[in-house]
Length: 339
Image (cartoon, rainbow, N blue to C red; front, top):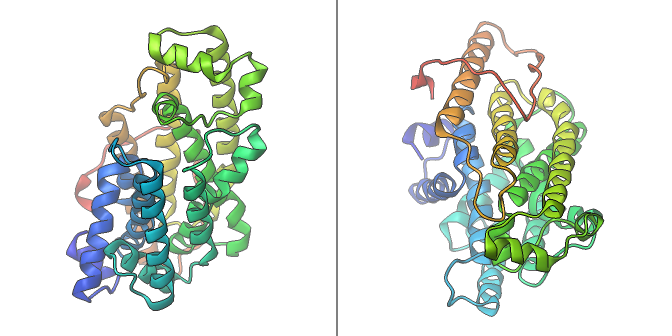
């Protein structure tokens, strides 16, 4: 976290500043796509976004610890300890852990509904015991807590040009779209953890059972039935992006380039999966760094223009958001110094 961002947000307490810096480190290390997009936000809003994503990343790391010596029981113990810290932090403002301290401060500053954090933790606990979802409806129930509430937490920070309740369905859908994208990209890695996030009814519709997924993973071979299921899951995911897209125009103009950039870059992950022949059981599809940079630079031009307009007239009236497809987006090179 830069001192300029903390100063802009009015965060002066040394303990709080250190807590927010820790959240930024977590976001930078694990969420490259969204970390890049966050740099397009006004400086004063960035610490809050890092706090929200830093906490989510920390909880997720507990659930998916790569350490083979950390079994489900120990992960459950650690998650329960985090829950206690969270409850205390939201009540008192300090849960004894820097990440929780920053989260509690953000929740207070932006009046974020505490139930969103409770729902998120419930989804994290379910990951300790649930290994699959029979139907897409079951998966959406899980993703309310694991993804939709992230969008709902973010909305007060981003700001809207419509009543917040009107923007909430799109914000929730965007969180779900991002997570569905991750599920498709990470099929092989999740399978190694014993989990399958592709809905059971979708797989069964193509004659795919978990054993076939394991066979593909272990042999490095493809199967036409699995490919058909993955293509359907991609189509389903793109449908959720379309569901979320109208919400971009409901955001504060200063926040739109950030979220639109995340929208486009996550869509590019879907493109990369297709270009790689849906080999997600064997390797992770990657969006090239130059592509991420180009999209971000194009959005930066929009940020600069919006800030100039807002500087000339206040308040800035809501303006149209250029049409954005999760499959493609133009980019214009501009100076990175504005970041």
